[in-house]
Image 1 (cartoon, rainbow, N blue to C red):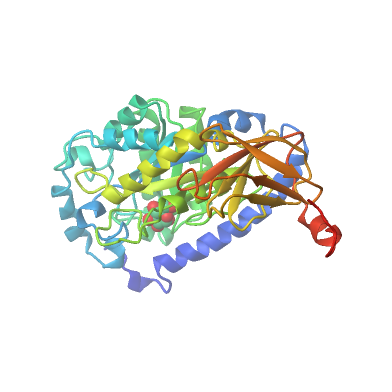
Image 2 (image 1 turned 90 degrees about the vertical axis):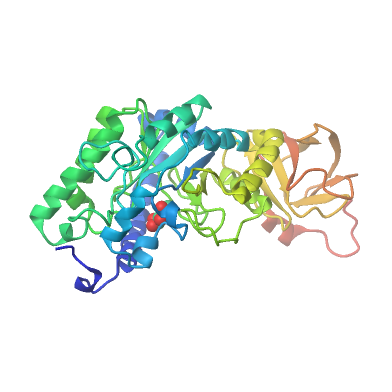
Length: 448
Ligand code: GLC
């Protein structure tokens, strides 16, 4: 008998929320240990080496695609509309995407300046897009008749992009997917199935770059045998980077729908509208400016930005996603130097700009263009020169102890959606606005 929600006093979502809270508490503890480790040089040289490309990449494409795309009402539709398993399974007869749809995603990702991709190989609905010996509920054995993960991997590689696999531990289709929490035989069967899937994924597609687990409801890491599972992954894929959602911290943290810096590698994942899977009626799109600002914020704080598309069931990308990513790509083409390989930046204060840094170069990203001059408060390092990053055109800088002023700028923003000014400083750019607040000359004293 399939365990129903009525058997639980908490809903899955509530459990997930609780698990999330527990994980962040655990993460907070881990951070303290990490901070201690960080004071020792070369805390984990192997991790640093494996993650170098990922830190430099900064920007990736997330892809949510599965049977839920056929319904077009969010990837949680099975749960949120309480669709019986037998009815939901019928969607597998209608999921017949165009061959190699992933080529267009990979092309778009490359044009957008994204350096890696992460696709749902199996979401919570339990349908595998990859070929599996462990179930018939997978794309090659249903109407689709093809291994969609293979198509995706080939497409990503053809565009020179790194390859990531999302894999949901939570499984609404597997008969043991919920009862594993209360029945040890079921847990053993189910964990055997999950580990078997992960083994297939890590064995059948060549070198993988990222393994992106999701939702570990209803078990704890001990129940999933996560440590054993991830040891197997590392044996099969020694260079892989693993996220924290199998319940153990592993290589990187995954703040979701928010940008939250951590003292360990982190990646903010975000949707472009409000849904991960295709939701045809959701028109709540972020603007290209919002996306660019988010990307800048991640780069400023040493993190990555994984931005999602939810293709239609035929594999085509919603036009609004293409429009947004194309605009972001145009911006990245001219301004990518301020994002890739950026180092954490301690200049933060402005009400119309964000900042990134590489070495002694400070990039001022102006998103609300104020007119012919802009100023930075309390920049303590000397600015030797400044230029508009996109055109290379030099701009005039005036600087005193308190204010760095760039003048003679055009009245309207020269670049869209954000104009970047590169400032070459004589040392690492640091901002001290407290000094400005305390020491700034009072009324009647001329400072410029
Ligand atoms: C959440 C959602 C899921 C989505 C994921 C992406 O865990 O349950 O639908 O895939 O976030 O981070």
